[in-house]
Image 1 (cartoon, one colour):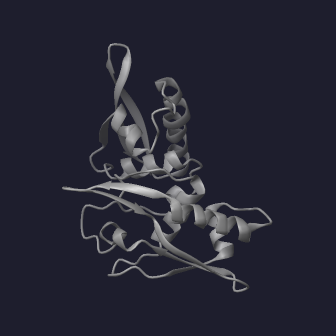
Image 2: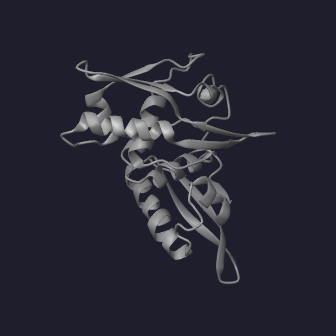
Image 3: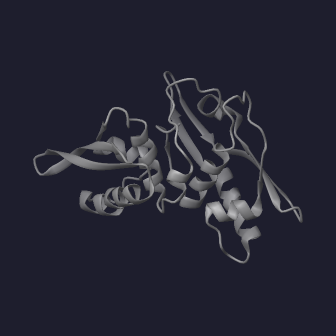
Length: 210
């Protein structure tokens, strides 16, 4: 799931992380996850007076968001949520993951990435969160290599977004480096691979903090 290509806003990504944090290791099926609106807004980062409406708008958009998972012999296109139900006057919302996400979030015995919610919920960029997940997998290795094209794909970037490497580096890589160093349990430095004067790949050197 970490390797899948998708694009979420910061608030949408925080909501998915909040839901995932409620999954228990022994769960064999998804449950309907009940979340208090006040906790929802505090963690996701909604501080508007019209927070009920803002919350509904957020989940509605997330119901339309898709991700693409490349499997051995197929490509799965799927949405994150199957439903969002609000209980007026009760102060909570019930959310459900799409059932086809079960193999990627339930009963994971090996080959999975584990991290504490507190290490990502404070990050201010959805790209920083995604990059944290991609690097956290390889923390025990100490480095991870990407072609520039592959990294852009995994971050969910469209071809016309940050086409110049200098902008991509400033807006995404440098910001993520600062955020992870300040607010997470890992940090990184980079080595650029060049073809002539053009950067075509990046090696991330990953360090565990503390």
